[in-house]
Image (tube, rainbow, N blue to C red):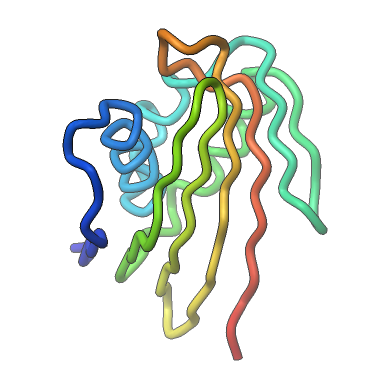
Length: 125
């Protein structure tokens, strides 16, 4: 079971709650939830690794990742403003620790449909 730690933040912000749930889904391998939250024309750049375009390619990538369940997820900050948001934290998996920051752009300000993601991941030695 994945240990989840979330630093205190505004509990009245629905988009922050959504991003918390979205990242917990990544940590626990809930591929179906993740795929359901993105736009058909999603663009996901994993900097230093690859660019993923379209929901089909996104689904393939997420389904490959779902086998990697985190031992621990710590979310440090969730920042939202208009169509943009960012979340940073760390994941521990198989004796390794990764720090990450994801920057999101939503389809619009009213819905939690993700149109773009930029991921920055660093393995800590």
